[in-house]
Length: 259
Image 1 (spheres, one colour):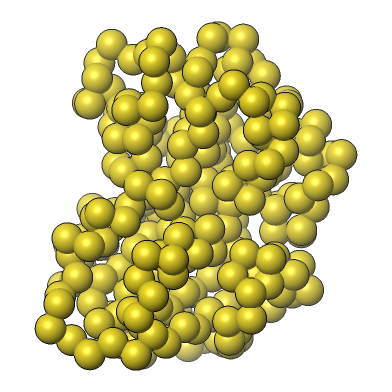
Image 2 (image 1 turned 135 degrees about the vertical axis):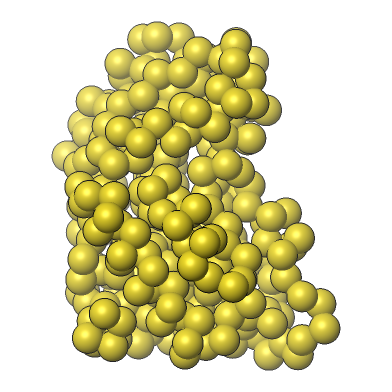
């Protein structure tokens, strides 16, 4: 039994970390498409193409039984496309996150931060409204947060200012729940909680586990293999990877092998 996880960069390791904790004996493979990050400013066609290339690479090389899209932008634009192209279960992070947001909010006011692509897609907005149409939803594009995380500027003053810039307008609307609409953003949880201690934070990685359980076969041998693949290796990637998941083996993949 094997689970494949892909993201546009390193942020999806927050999802990978949660999966590791819940599937200790399962073979897990992560692909970070860091050579082409971010996906958030790309067109839908490009996002779908990149997503299919990453998915096929994991399927063809590691015989995965389930694919997790640990990227909100790809989940927003490419989930249905991948489901139509692949013969294995595909799980995105938007629907689980939306379910958790609807469960968390007490005053029915939810804020969402995400990449330009995710916010423009209205994927979380539509998913939450489908669950409870009475919930008021406020969104804000937060394009600077991904590169700040990718560069390892987690505790930097610039990052703190960016967090306030993006979240303050939502707090002013009275939200009690904030959706971290990009898998990079949970890395910034500590900063967000220090600035806004009363907000309930929605991290989709915590909501996808039941979805994965329902998709995986139970009759395959498990060896607990762990491998992280990246299309471009940087010092910042290595530092954040070590911070999130420790010394799991890291292997660089030539982008030509994927496209």
